[in-house]
Length: 520
View 1 (cartoon, rainbow, N blue to C red):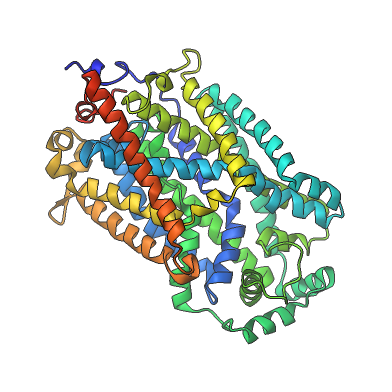
View 2: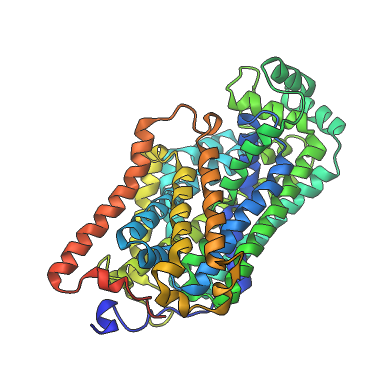
């Protein structure tokens, strides 16, 4: 059967105009730099005694192992769709599709919460602290957030429809603004000592700095760092790192992809590690590690001794001790850009997933249509924009997205399956392996490099899955949430089976498509 009959057309229609450095910044934005303020609070509250600065350096090599494996795999099959393309060609189409279908649903769930997060963790507490409570309450109204979300998704669509170059410019602009806020945060806290912070914080909030530490210790918080808590607490740092490999899903538009993915993924992890460590180090320098752990612990445990009107996210705590409202505004308002920039990258990625599924004919072919002027999958974009609005409504008006509670567990399972695909690649798809670049076929310890990295990636993913299911993270295992989370995989499996049966009846079995690598 001719190759053009297996795929929608002979060429994807996408253009490689994203550089390695563009892809690196894309990955950094996907991880959400400012979210460190929140994940640090949660880690400190749930894992009493965690050393946040150390978690950054422990999480980095774990992510690097997986990241290098993904970069090497992308060298073999540099196509939009990433590990969907790999797993469907090596394991089984139904397995590959169902795994990445889970990632797609998680991306859309995150897209749906971006406006609420920008307001809840940025605009609303800042306005309330300045005395504009009425405006903060107005913005926090679900109907208002819904309207703002529609506008936001429309803006994202306008940026995305203009192609990868316009998208990359928006990503770079967001990155620069976010970094300005982080630099302001780090400089402000590095120039402040705990004694000064304690005095100003106690005066401005009415909560006594020393009492917070004493009450936390009285309620079971340790008086120093605990190694075991740090080793488990890295799960929140890893959760913050989630998405470090998302550039593989847009590989069909990355220039010199065989070199670029290593720069984008490994470089992105290193940049994000530095950002994370600087934020945690500056926070400890000004607030003191005992206070950070104590106030986070009291808040997360719901203690009546915690009386602030907002959660102790680090950027919000900093707001209470800075005399200059302009600096506070820079720190908090640039934080609000973080979820908005993340949402843009998630939508862009989701569009490419829909495109890749359609190009393989798993979804209707109309979703693979590409605008001739901007080389953008415009039908897929329209679909994702509408779907984003639906997911925001689900986030605001229903509890259903809270059921996706085991995101890290599901993500690590997906990575584990892709790791298995890499391990067996040289043995089950010799045709693909033998045509791969020499670096992929290089042997280390008697094993092909892709197999060795696959084994290490599998071990790392199992560790992440284990850590994500510890009681402090998962609490008592909720059967409903487990069924819902893993039900997403099942739905993906069913979607593929329906499409497979349909195309078999039409006389072009999908199984033949997945014997070939999609054209560029």
